[in-house]
Image 1: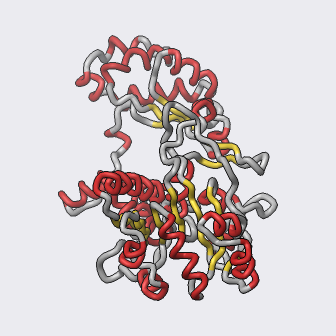
Image 2: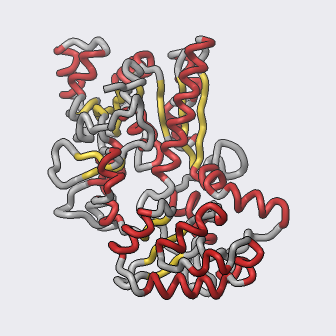
Image 3: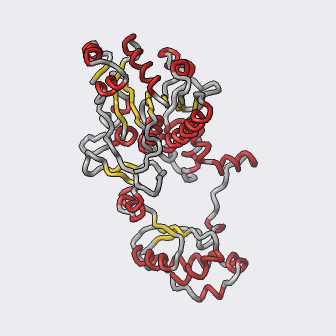
Length: 399
């Protein structure tokens, strides 16, 4: 299997979801990722046990999602011996990733300048809530705040008149933001390969939201107003949502109306409308009548029949799916967008949305238990068996 980051060594000193997700993507691409946890463990491990996010039998699928394909070491870098281990790991790595707040970096001497002094060819990657500049550069942030609320996501996805804002899904900002950071890291690795000089990469949850809402942000900058939601009456009949006989919503999205007018109407048995409204002007003047007739036909057909008819005429459409539906989506299965977990028979984790040489990604190893690979990693960076035993006994490291 093609793993383009094979040989790249990544030191992941981050917690929760956003920044660890970036390291998980790099691991999916073949990088050797070593996750450092505090001896107390990543705070992410407490999310499901706390009941904040439900699970089956308490299984921590969230930690698995953002830490698959990594090895793990538990280390107290606040002690001199632990600092020595940390510095060896920094010198070992090609990439160091963190979401530590700036004040924590100063306290632990893990600022980019500290790391680059140890390894001048290092890619230092940081993840923030609100970014590295401005009055809140020192403040913490989670995706529910920095991405979902502050970044405008909740507002644009909340219906007018709703009694409360739309609620975010778990890690809905963390996962895409992690992928953005992974992309920046890959670009930074190219820079190092060309110049031999280390570089600092920075991504924030707030910046990620601004990117994802690019059209809304552009419109707001031009007008000083929110991009309006198009009234249904302004939407062409082939760009609407309709409900089928079995109570499923189907989205038609045939923007090139001239191309799809005839096949779509023939698929629905409305052949007479093809000639009745042959040009855009006629269709626009009668769009509500046409939409009503399309809606009436769809309301009388079940989703299986509609799928066959619209598919046979190469229409662009989709029924609205639940996450349960996506599990059995034929395209999802064929392309390996959900990877089977190697240790849990029922669990599937979303693959990083990039493939190489048309090959399907896989999970090569489960997320590490706290300190699972401590001895193995210490031996790789030059510690003797007796030195490792001493570090374990003194609880500088945990296995």
